[in-house]
Image 1 (cartoon, rainbow, N blue to C red):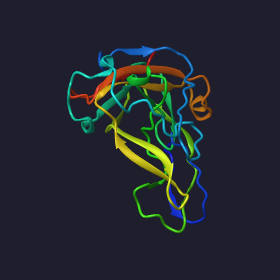
Image 2: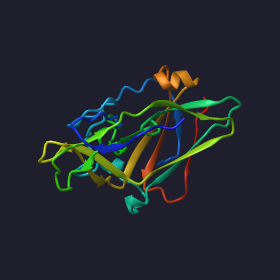
Image 3: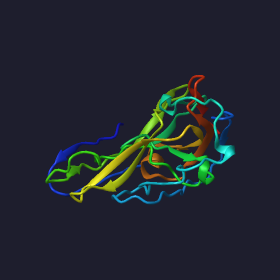
Image 4: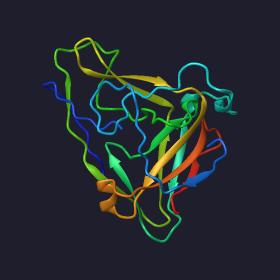
Length: 217
């Protein structure tokens, strides 16, 4: 099942679900109650405009590749087991990216929200967004799913017309952490019940091909 998102012009109503340096994968089974800070628009996932990546990076957060961060990183989520696994869809496949600069404590706004660009000329009406469907994405045995992060951050704000908008910037080349919630059943994924978290540390950019992340315990 896939998510649904559609933007149309109209009344001011915005419903929104915004929301490896060593290649090591950690399957911790812990909950993922991480929250962002600084967002101005409505969000049910709490990832408005997390900070912590600006300014001088600590030495331990600097990457070794020295490449252009817009080259991005490709994640290949795999299920090497014999039973299906389930991921959560909420406008996008649910995963979190955290930065080294703040000790991997806040989710970064890596998923673009349904909003106009803050740099765009303000219009008379704000856009209205249809809410996303909560759905489960099945990952069958021996299956895989690929996602790409191009190093973009999407921080929310309000433009001169008072409309919800987004500023897109490029994250610095540095060390980051990916966290993916994995569920035992489709119902658990749809209701966000008992996720088992899998995490992997990586560098932006990653130049030596996709990062394979097995999601089995």
